[in-house]
Image (cartoon, rainbow, N blue to C red; front, side, top):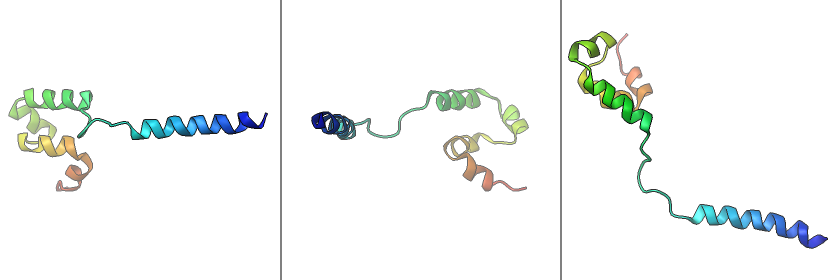
Length: 75
């Protein structure tokens, strides 16, 4: 019976190490929701963006770091 108490944790540890050592994707993983938001904002007119309180140049900063973008806004 002692062999089961050693094998089960060891197998779990071996699986965890194998998953950890597998090569993952290189670079940031694209987020489909973020891509969709970027496309929707890019399709808006300058007036529509202005009504939202952003300019076309704000789109990358707004989507990449929304907290930082808002912190840098006056008001």
